[in-house]
Image 1 (cartoon, protein in one colour):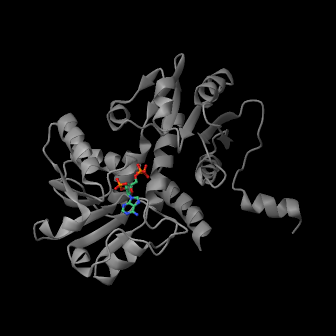
Image 2 (cartoon, rainbow, N blue to C red):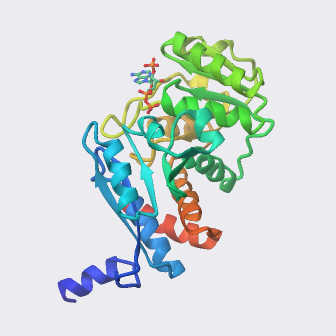
Length: 301
Ligand code: ATR
């Protein structure tokens, strides 16, 4: 196989870029390791859309210029990643209510005179959970963390009808602030803040646990927020937002105690699918979503 053929066989795009190709992309810093081009270019190839998706590294203080530049260049849509998910809000002409309440935007969709911002991370997590048969409505949840990611998860749980969410965090004050805010905004007294080491005070029962801290992320793969077995005995299902490593220490401990455990790769998949649906005004079938997932998985074998 020639180098060119080898390149073609790795690239699922069926179409040549031409004068009408629509462009979407990712702004963030860094963006070099992103899997989003694989998601969107695979979808475009499978669905026959004339669309190309590329990463754009944006330097500090460059978000406003990047969004204005994207608008001027006719870019159809953008994903936004760390560290710009909050900062980008000031550059939008419209914002979806869920994204506004969460205070973070990861998807920009071109609209009259600018871009409308959405948060597909949370809807992506919701779809990922449902695809694994996990329903938030009526659930008793333990949520680890009170940072940006966990705050959004807390909001999602409240909005989707979780019964109660025990939010455990190393810094109690942060958990209390987030809980007050989410409870206030949703009008549901559902988030209960707690110091991590006080987890034994959570009422007996079996819980869905969502790991929303950065603890355990590559290369610190042996780290975990709670080690004790007594904690994992409370958990029937563990969902880690991390997908690198493929199986976190948190997931290992959940499984060792008989629970089911999932990583965050399906959340990544579905946040991308939802963004793709918004940009192309289409519905992606589960078959196409899972075909993309199979390609994503190969990055972790
Ligand atoms: P993100 O946007 O990824 O959520 P973040 O806002 O910095 O990142 O939040 C990181 C979360 O991981 C916080 O809940 C943080 O706990 P604190 O609020 O106490 O800082 C948690 N975290 C980070 N390192 C931790 C560690 N070594 N042990 C326990 N929790 C940790």
